[in-house]
Length: 232
Image (spheres, rainbow, N blue to C red):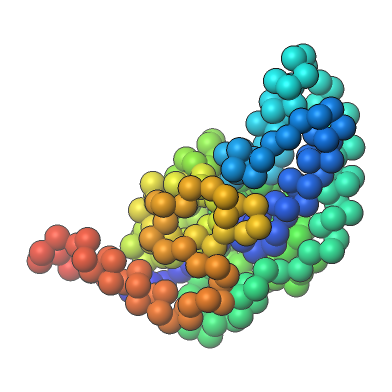
């Protein structure tokens, strides 16, 4: 039986990844660097401020950069773009239905908790989550399974009792390594990545009713249980 839902944040609840990509693309263009979406997606899901973004630039230039100065400059532009973003389609409806069904909800994010909680509060979604498992809560972020395992522990749920919602390749890998049924919902940027490990790929969170997703996950759990092994 499905008892919990675990959501990624960046790119799944809020499209923070398009503003992130756009802010970096503006910097890259100044020096004649092109980082196509299919390359950029390999950097996503590991951190809110991915180190690979700086490495792309430094490799192109052939020398180190002032990362602190770049971070401050780029973050200002990203903030301007983020102010225009609202929850992605299906997020609010899925959370309302989860509450109506008595499901517990968590965030499993490679970003820092202040970033995640701040945006959730701005969107009036913070109270929808029982647990926020973020970068500072684990030794390793995605694609390590640590964030999902931490969220499950705090939700008091087993992997087979939860559904993960992700948008990126690293996020899907993290959820699957933790043993969860994983639904991938890629955004404008992450749709260029490899999501083959996901159990299901949807164009948006409202593309398939939560009732059917729960049935899909429970059917997977029954199919993977050894004969005679009881399920909870």
